[in-house]
Length: 176
Image (cartoon, rainbow, N blue to C red; front, side, top):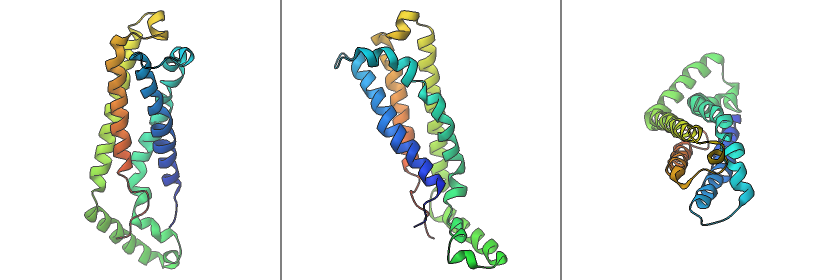
């Protein structure tokens, strides 16, 4: 099985960062807002240090979605042995055929559309949350009131939907 750079990027973003770091931090912050746990240092730094990580990572999510079809098409198998030894002419027609069969047999465009929509919804939820935080004074920004819990929960839910959508992308190049 050939592992592509795209597969590594998908895993790093979706599993390592989003599911195993960012979403647990959001869940912990919701627990703080619900008075289920206490962690003064985390409460003081979450909004200013952890929450904005979304802004730095969203570009990676967009690139993963944008490049999925090209990078995970079975056409890519022509780049590896033994198919890489085919003549260029054969690679062109065979590659096109492999790609078209893949699009026919798998809901590739549907996966991309769902992930793109999830990214847009996550961005919108993040912007609503940021707007609610901007409307707070300095004290509120450092320790948001429980009334903002809905905005944090909505953002967390949208992150989960996006993680689910990206998880639908196959983790290996499918042979058709």
